[in-house]
Image (cartoon, rainbow, N blue to C red):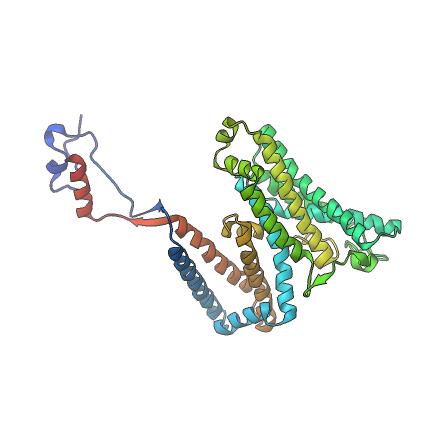
Length: 402
């Protein structure tokens, strides 16, 4: 039986207009949230530009507030970030060097994410590529074999992509065969790679001569052929990175394999209904994704660090997720995005040295800027809808009852 005291919260003064006594409902209570999120329709280019511009301005303002709070001049800080990234030929070359592994790893992550396979193991796959190629380097050093630079680098690239592909293959196999969670699986592999490097650091074969400190030898000192040649002040990895972005775009947009990846990403059941071998497509795609991350590890060792440490990846595997997401998995857009993030990283290092800004504050400033830029994606895909007024709700209900 209906409680006679029950009233419509929207029309308590005139309940009979909405809930006539003759047809009194069991429940006549409608509650609308103050703010809700709704999916947007088609977004114009002008609107996109406006959202990004507003987001960037807000990021700069919030970052400036942070700098003021720690007693630094925000204008000088931003100028130092810009000049520290591109002010000189050397600083510009360093910025582009930082962008190389970001672009390669971002493309690699895009392959998996396009298929809705959440590969969070880019960090471990980069380290796996570095580990496999380092095994080859150490073996060549201790064997005393004389190998030319080109054959050596071909061998190192093969080892690096094999290591990365292996770390990509494992979660794909377990996902397709036993339905394991790929997010946790790929994340845990990161720590396996790190701890394996810590194990290698304690092996006498990997240590510098006459030392007991856990450290891996500098490959450049023992095998000079490992050093990659430079073009315009940056190792040739940047040429490979640009070529990979172009090839990845063609692969994803113009080939049957790319189409299969898109279909699986849209609906796994639809792909199965269409007769696709979904398990093989997922394994094949993760092999490619892991192999590219392994290639990024090769460039990190042969083009930048010349040794192997647990920080060889340097967070690139995780930052690459931001690169891929901000570019909406488009390899071409990843080029400027990776350069932008590399600029932020190089700029934060510059203000630490020139303005004595703490590393934590510099990293927080970078995080604020990235947070706002990622937030732009939310407002491009969704919109905020505020609660309607009392009069609007009454009019809507009357239209429904009419």
